[in-house]
Image (cartoon, protein in one colour):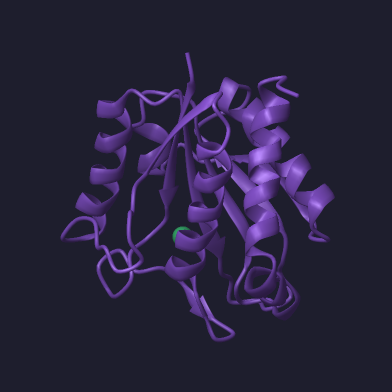
Length: 188
Ligand SMILES: [Zn+2]
């Protein structure tokens, strides 16, 4: 049986559940493209079945932030995904703050072990600081999903070094998430 991975490309283009923007980059666009790269890796690996929340770069899920998030969760729950991976980029008022971090509902958990493997893979593939796995019980996509769920904040759009990585290393970020999944599942 293939392992079912649900990829949620965070946010939408436009203002409904729109993402962050800084340094000439829009979060929803980066999330979408990294998700497509990740989906391609998983689709080319027969050990996996994969579904993504957004199937085109212009697609808008939901009619407000709440329903946008609910739709993503409902898709994954209805599909009975084994793992839920939400892809995001971070932002902060302080432009010096940078790095990758991965959120889970609680620590310790199955999700936290997957999150640690993904973060290890990202920080070995890309020269970006490791901001550790963090618990956030308030995020709907982590709280309402019926399967282990992680939310990957690839890096900070508001930091110039991270922004350069987010602009040029989208394929490598996706490859690293794929490698992290393989390591977590002990797959060669
Ligand atoms: Zn986001």
